[in-house]
Length: 298
Image (cartoon, rainbow, N blue to C red; front, top):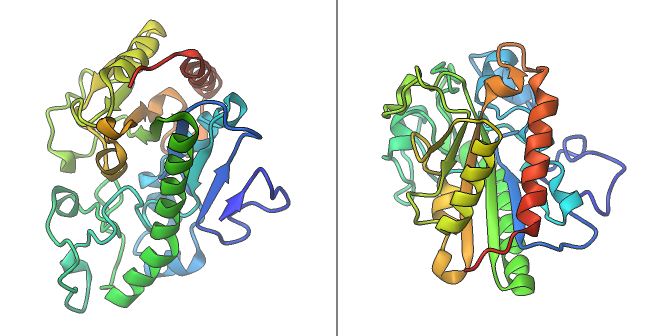
């Protein structure tokens, strides 16, 4: 782990570390921001074992999301981000949510082998990238997956649990904003009611009101709509493992997921920022400032 408040000599990627926490000098608001899918450390070993080249592997990446939210530490909230890409390890899943067809050996009984995510090819070790391309040309071994999970998945969640605990201890409440992007065309594997002819700019996921107070969800939706953006709730993204697992409002821990349409800020096929990036970054930074000034009753 690298903490950018204390180590500025090397990036986490250069140090081959699984995560980076960018902290404010002093945490002044009860918010945590997380970016689980913006990692870009595509190792040579991973690319060699994949049937895809790097340009296809990046289709699952939430490119630049960590950059869009990097105002958070300046507003008094920590930003946690994964360094390794979603195509390699998805930290927004159960720890052992694995597709048995991907492995040459029989998986242990404790492994979750059936779920909607697994059926879609998007388990802890994904089978496909978001455009439905198969990642691996050969089957994996469970011990390799287990090593990957221990090395990259668990450090992320250990850090997140500590951030939540410390935030709640200090403020008697915690608000977790899980930051994501979505393709401008949603994958057919999602099988949802989402209508691509009426594209959303923003999708807010709060597990249909179970993981977060309505006050916070309403505030975020109203903010984006006042900026002229089209906002959906919970369709097709109601929140992943992070939202479901950590959002427990009765314990004063709230979790909400924000998905941003990539067409707003990047050239999806080129993985480069578009002219819209600067405007959207200003909108996100102003949202963070607004959240820091709002009082949410929990």
